[in-house]
Image (cartoon, rainbow, N blue to C red; front, side, top):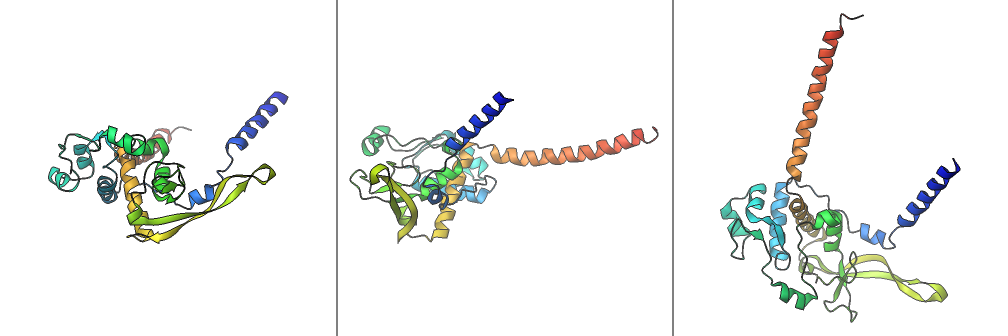
Length: 254
C-alpha cells in the first residue's frame, strides 16, 4: 500500500512538472483555433487557392498528386490547370515547389520544409497560430524584420503581412535572480498597421488554408468520418432488430 501511494505521488509530481503552463500561453491562445473541417469542400477549394498563391513558391506537398486533390475537391482537370497549376506540372505529378533547394538554403539558411504532414506532426491549431503569430522584430538577429510568437527565431518571412497587416508584441521583462533580465514575456500581440483584410476576413483566410493542409495530411479523413456515421447508424438499427428478435424468441420462456 505504501509503495502504491509513493508511485501515485511520484506520477502526480511528474504531471505537475511537465504540465506547467507556457509563460506565453495566454498570448498563444488569443490567436484562436483552427477548427478544421475537412468535409467542407468549399473551404478546401479556397484553401488550395491560398496555398498555391502564398505557400507553394517555397513549400512542397511532395506526397500528394494534383489529380488526387482535384478528385477530392471536385475539380475538373481543366479547372485544376486554370486555377492551381502554374508551374507547367502535369495533373498526375506530385505537388512540388518550383524553388530550387540550393537557392532556398542560401536565402533562408535552410530549405523550407515539405508541408504534406505538417498538421499531422504539429496539429492544425499550431499551424493556424503560427500563420497568425508574426510580429515586427527590429533586432539585428532578425534579418527578415519579423519574429513569430509560436516559433521563436523562425526564418520564414511574414508572407501574409500584406493581408494581415503588421503586428507588434507588447511584453514585459522576466526577472531572474538579483533582478537580472532573463527574457521577455508576452502581454498581448496587437495590430500595428492594418493590411488589406479585416481581422475576421484574415481569420477565414488562415482557417481555409489550414483546413486544406489538414486534408492534405490525411486525404481519407473526410470519407472515413462519413463512413463512421453510416456504420454507427447501421449498428443502432441492427441492435434494435436484435432486441426485437430476442423478445420474440423468449416471449414464451418463463
